[in-house]
Image (tube, rainbow, N blue to C red; front, side, top):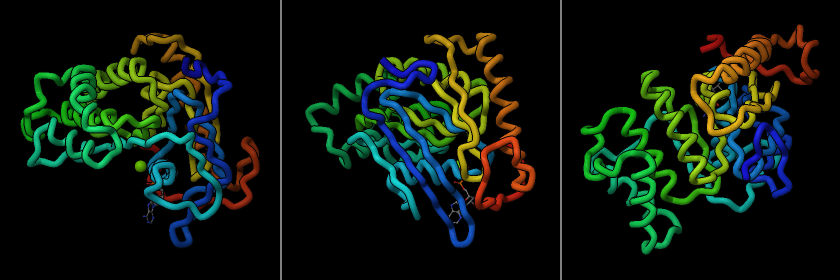
Length: 272
Ligand SMILES: Nc1ncnc2c1ncn2[C@@H]1O[C@H](COP(=O)(O)OP(=O)(O)O)[C@@H](O)[C@H]1O
Ligand SMILES: [Mg+2]
């Protein structure tokens, strides 16, 4: 049973991060960052552009090294879904998935069963032999999702995966993601700058700004969820208010939040 509404489970956490720091040259991108994600929990990290979300995911995935702190994973393989599907254009949808399977430890005897299962869950059974250019943007991202699930990750990292899609397509994918998550029971860390998306999807919304975690909101809405449930709008209102407070925080008037020992420089541009 997944953690619901922020309830902490007795199982070992899927991800435990303590005291994480990361610099790029003189730019402090992550500071003092602690985060624990329970097994099978769906956590959304909400933050403005440049707040360090992708850097955090890259460190969890081992694609980037931290300058200080620890990341402990509960012995789980990590899958990663990016904003762009990153499919090989000369391979069909199914061959793209095979390509990923060839690079992982899943025995070949299971590939057929896994592909049947996840292509069906993603509504793509009829499209396995299509090339990426024959598919819509939403379908290409579905193929990328199938690819990330077929390698059987215990932890799925998703970096603004629907951010490049039109709103209707993104909405369908969010609904389908929750259905797939219910059936596949992964731990998911989902990064977004879209507050409503975060509230609809998450057990817990973690607000990030200037390289730090500033706030955390449990989403106590029962599942399965209706996308237009007024309860999601209510949580969204609260999350947006707290998100704005965190994102607009200037180090010199930070009294409303815990002290910030080393103010993080922040690139201009404001909220998305
Ligand atoms: N490889 C890199 N080299 C130098 N600076 C980087 C690098 N990656 C990210 N940054 C900087 O770190 C900050 C956080 O970036 P990022 O983690 O991509 O934020 P987000 O995903 O929240 O938009 C930004 O100011 C960005 O320009
Ligand atoms: Mg990013």
